[in-house]
Length: 376
Image (cartoon, rainbow, N blue to C red; front, side, top):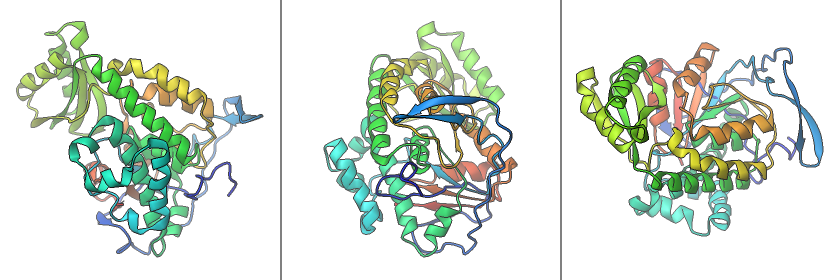
């Protein structure tokens, strides 16, 4: 594999997502011996070609390169909220995984592994710290898997990857679109910029459980009738049927919570995040991300990386940069992403990193989905 597509120091290989009967949490033990061959991507005819500068060379990239992808195995990476004190315990036992934390310390300026393992929880839960922590721990989980018997074969079998919000950066790093270090720098800035944007206005997020997306939209519309423009709300995360997150001004979120039962919602859960992510409230973060992305070398991914913004894979580096900048103000299209993967034939998937949120979502959409959790 050429150095242009390999994560420095961690030769991460192809990731994949899929459905299954048994969902198991594991580090090394218990992997099924069902490693599949890497399936060739079904590439369609070129549609739009773009000439972009990568390093000092002009490279012609077709953004629709992965348009007809046919997934077999996928790696799925978690987003903010998956963090938990104690993550990294398994990673510290694997030299290649522990090395990632050491490299992260040089960029972050503090001992990340110590905070991941020992907390305190309040510090780990902060936006500015949880995002780098989850990014590093998720890639460390890849190294934990690689160290297991048959792990490299599983990694090699992965032919598509994606991540929930923050997890999209992890997926891009895994795919070779940018280096581990460059990805961490972007994630660090992203967390800081999102926190600053959240501090600029009173806003919040709430999960609505038990309603379809149309009903949640009606709930948002009803709440918006009672608040001013600065407190409007919208669906920010389309997670899975019956589970959608709403973001917006604090008064708008309070109106949503007050009206939810009258719309027959089973329950609402206020999310422990800094503010209204994936809405216009995050607009102040966009220009900072654009500036950082402009100076970052991004390459065409080795395998399809499905975007949160439009649930499509993109191959052109300039397009990827634009999408990453837009992502913080755009609703997360996770439900469409998972449905598309399953409909296109996904056989097996792995959730890599802390928590089991993604596995739960996939199982909610397909009870027979074959998905395993690889922790670190």
